[in-house]
Image 1 (cartoon, helix red, strand yellow):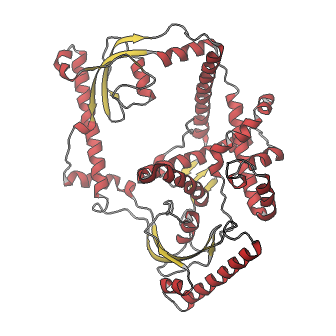
Image 2 (spheres, rainbow, N blue to C red; image 1 turned 90 degrees about the horizontal axis):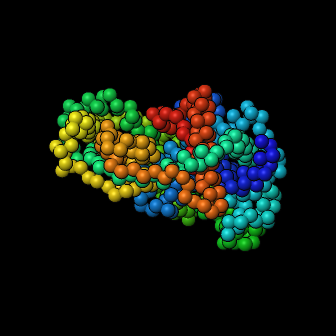
Image 3 (cartoon, helix red, strand yellow; image 1 turned 180 degrees about the horizontal axis):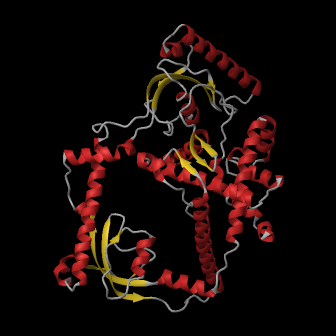
Length: 495
């Protein structure tokens, strides 16, 4: 096992670090005081907290990438999915790290140093490691920053070492290879009846909506929100002013200007907009936002932490400093977490009631048709039966959105027999395989393709073993999820 680790160490450091790079907080020097919420963490794993600061620093980075990639399509639903994915990854990483320590995994200073060089802060415009930036970082970045990054990188490396050790226990036999090949290349032609749940119209009554609300109102609980107005002073960058002496002098003057503006607003209760105009500072006001909601063109971590420490409208923060800006925030309004009245959440409630009822109606109709088909009544449903061409089951089911479980169910059907109701992403499917072609041997002859196929099987089996192992670890772990309390357990990240 140790020999395998040595051979694969370069891959551990330079390959998988990229995936978990977002878990390392780059921000530093953000100091402020004030009130916090009842719980200052989004999750707790065997007593170890994942703080809002940890979570926000990761989310803000990934949200920015999503925003650039998806533009206006990056909506609330996509943002929530991203949050869940990030939290699951953070929980997974922490559990892996804890198990690595239990299993006696160790890492060296050299490995950590090499991994730290992969951080974006030490890369040039082409994404390559820049020795000069690294040496400059050694001189100017505070010890606290290096200590934090070293610990986070150690955790990441140990977790990956444990993952590699688990994967190395998996061996792929010729029988495994043949079974995988047959499954991936199996083709079927089928008759089917598809029931889209949206084809079952339903209009809920006020009584039904009220009843559903009373039972489920906690799930519609709104998080606390704040709105702030703020003054901002952008710092000149090295690109703006190459001379460090002049640049530092300007930054020093900006600090003094922000202090004067703060004193004027704090002691004399001056209007923030007027003060900003007087001192030539940028003024703006945010919309209401939650702890985990990103603000366009703002330092999210700075805002989310500082804004939620303000208690009463009109309260100011001290001067805050990020890498590129100085800020002063004043609370405009704060809305505490609350369960909304039925009118406030009416649209969400109605959509869910309709969806649940349509699911039920589609499911009941699928059961009725299934019973009729199995008693020889296929002719009674002839107008609704469609037939596919031959298709590879593991690739895509023509006209049907379904996951791997649905595809496996279809592949396992006996030829000539109707299935029971099979759940799809958007409704229910009743299927009868009329033709099935499963290769009896591997048609590939060239060594390179066979090697690639074997590696594909190996990766799939490694993931399956790792998934089962992680499920067992998860069962033994004590995990508190305060961000998505209804969301249940963390999942193994997809490969």
